[in-house]
Image (tube, rainbow, N blue to C red; front, side, top):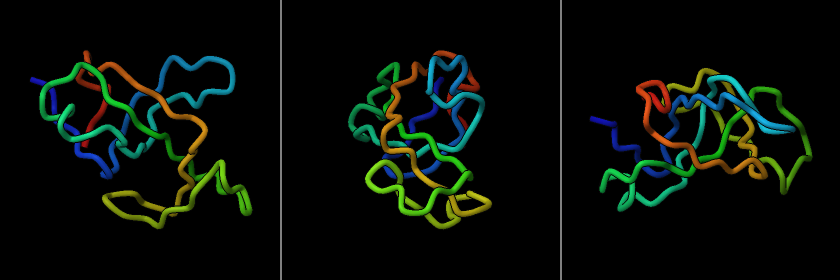
Length: 95
């Protein structure tokens, strides 16, 4: 049974494979999708990837968040890289 992600929480997600300028690898992400869909067992979830490669004055493309929810260091949310991933494998999103 797949895990129900919670909107606004930070999880690890597998962004592989990536295309073009999309971020790849397993990285932290912020869940954006409504909890109504997440709890209903929807097969995918919409999220925003995070990076520790911080860029100052990068608004509106990035938003800085302090370390929290198991996030070990300050990170930038990559607002222009919204992704919806299918939760068909156990390593798609982990707490």
